[in-house]
Length: 421
Image (tube, rainbow, N blue to C red):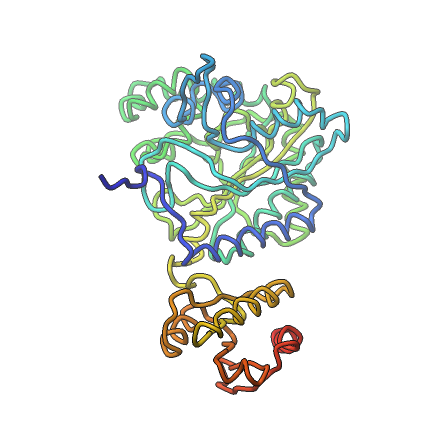
């Protein structure tokens, strides 16, 4: 029997792994400049954590979580998003007492039982930040600026940054009431999908986040801006926009951006890229001022975002297989049994000196070994045969210039390091 990957998952092969490493390294370097520290949480959490935080009537909880009962009869879920686990870790590990204001980032896999399509898998990978402990509009602006910088560093072009203001909890209640009245009208309700007909009664904000095109048309036709924001929330959002204008971040205010998670308040935002098709969000986030206290912590503000690495690489035009596999500085090519023993010692010395290198394991001809060196994109080939052993030196060939020089065995590491620095 041949086993295959589970539907909605995929292998990330050596031919493309350098793209992922470059993206992750770029993210870490960017976050370091902004003062964020890495945090790693388990991929499994209690199911109740996501019901409490994300919202019981969201698509994530109702349709998309991978949940099961473990041997201890506990309800467990693979994490569908990164914010709730980090808030749990922030509270459980008393980070609030160490320093109430924490700037954290994460990189790792998430899991949702969505219909698999390009850039949308059941195991996908996200990179994101969470800044916990401040209500300042400058923090909202910083988080948006960091996300824009991250997309730029990934090579994503022509994305649109859309912003909206959901207001505080009381404002959201006013908006929900208006939406419930709108979507309960017969001429509107009849045009909604079955899920949105249910959402209209239980959580009408979710109708605005429906991905079905017919529902999008209905929302844009019947939902017009309504007055639901309090003075404080209006000022907060105005200040966010002023900070973004100061650093010339391009954005568009879009009243239909609500995001698919119930914990968001005030500022929400989303970066979309037309090259991804209908499901075009490449990153999103927002403020969640009530989540910390809802989960038993202090009343404090927080803001964050997540970017899908899989989708960002597609949006950046990265094609799997184009970058090749492992690359080494030196390929050691021995010719004969005695030469192989000497080459194996040389290999160990070079690696101990910090030089990446590889060797032939099949006792093949020099021509075949040179082909292997080409595949590994080796910068140099070190040729060792019986003649070289007698002379106490090896032939070092530059694979770009084809220049070849002889170097004594005791000076190989220094000579190669001098050429690759």
